[in-house]
Image (cartoon, rainbow, N blue to C red; front, top):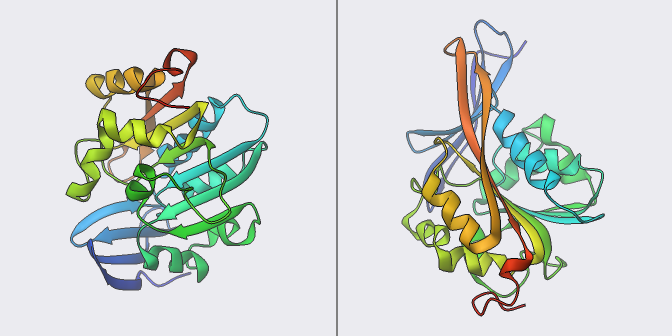
Amino acid sequence: MSRRFEELDWQQTDLGAISLRRRLHPTLEIDVHEVKLGDEFLMSSLFPVAEIELARLGLAACAADELDVVVGGLGLGYTAVAALEEPRLRSLVVVEALDPVIAWHERHLLPDAASLVTDPRARLVQGDFFALARGTTPFGARSPRRVHAVLLDIDHTPRHVLHPSHAAFYTPEGLRAMRDHLHPDGVFALWSDDPPDDDFVALLEAEFGSAEAQVVSFANPLTGGTSANTVYVAVGGPTQLGDPGHPR
């Protein structure tokens, strides 16, 4: 049995101090991995359901027989590992801004995510997802110019971002730039900590043609009740092709 608490890593970054901690849950008697940025909890291995559903729901909406996928945000690796479990997956690029987070996986500090550094289909890329989404080059070396899905889990919500520079992504112009990295019928899926935001769904519909917000509920062992996150899924359609704002 592991010790009750251990700080596995602590590093200073441009976003603040980030740490990976492991503790023994006193009632469940399991190891729990947690990530903190400064004094704020970012994620916990107690609550992986919505991160996994982000991949499953997003990739289920893809029509292609083989899939090239980008995940924005590595974290504990749940979304990326779930993407690797999709039989149609051909390539996976995971873009993570913080070197320490990539190093956790390379050092095998998160054993449930070992496939991310052993599966030849997967590549971990250090970079600013939002800057890459605005640009015209692929998300990583040897990446295809266009991909079938972008799965994003970085900010808390489209309105509660980790850094002010991220806010521009959640606008018509930001989404339009990201769409140019997708095939015409490509999928954009987003995790959010808040209930569905009707205004954001309308924005996705305007830019993609089809969008929905799905509430993902899961048991919360800390409260003994149920908690929920939201997964947005937007799918490109023929109504967007030929739009002057969406050159193809």
